[in-house]
Image (tube, rainbow, N blue to C red; front, side):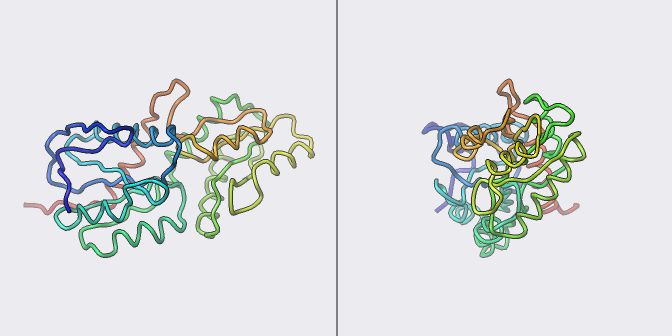
Length: 259
């Protein structure tokens, strides 16, 4: 079952939007985790729209590994028999979804490839530090880097790398806390820093957009919680996130054969 590559389903609603004729190259499949929350779904739609505007000749499709359709395996299966497909998981570390769900989706198709997770990335490291500064971080503030959490040791290693990058950009101690599965949990780290005498504690969410986990961070007891990575304080999309997606796509896409 194929899909009209001149059109794309808008993930924020039921309308269809027309796209410019594509250039015949690889299709970008932007693969997110998936969420039931309308704000998180809108965030993915915003990124898809921005990527489509960046390169009108490159078809952009959204897919998900959990919670909401379309499943990444279904999207790849609809495209890969006729097109080169590059799946860019907009997940911020390696883990089960990248190593299993996305890998399984592309494995049957010679023309499909996974670009690997969006993070860690130096571009996103800079965005994270900027979100923290925008939240009012000052030299000497204690910071909790809040990651979603995973039982996969590769995810923990990626989070540790991001924490190191944030330490290079913030004049103050940086500790890691998790929202689920892994420990320590974010509220516990905030409480420990308070007990040790930290005057101010801020949370830096290592998240692309809002949702259930972000809402829990607001309740974690910190003095301030930075915004997710995708949007600036004025609500506009941070272009560095799209740049990071394209960097992954370009590194994985088949190169044209010289004539």
